[in-house]
Length: 157
Image (tube, rainbow, N blue to C red; front, top):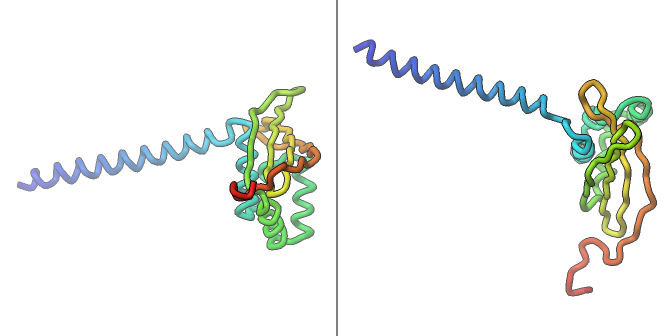
């Protein structure tokens, strides 16, 4: 009779242990897949700005650009810089990330930010450093006004 109760308990414990092990292995492999493409850094940058995540934002960059941003964050203070990041992305209505292209040993990712009254294109220059993609440069182009402001109701056209 004891054997009849122990066997289901052992089987249940084994299944639960296997599920826990599987979830741990899955989360570890997911973290190693993180940041496998140059454009993923752009999405991490946008997410960090929205959340006001200073460390996440800084982790998107490599020196000397990162050094300048760290100095700026230190000068402004943590709360103020976090608010600055959120304000930076708040007016953005949409983000379009174009396919990365290799150029002179780096990769360029063109990103188009849509605001209510204009669009702006930025070229992020990426390089893989110690297995992770980092932004090593940013080129800003001129804003282009939009013919119909974002959010205009169709009946007003």
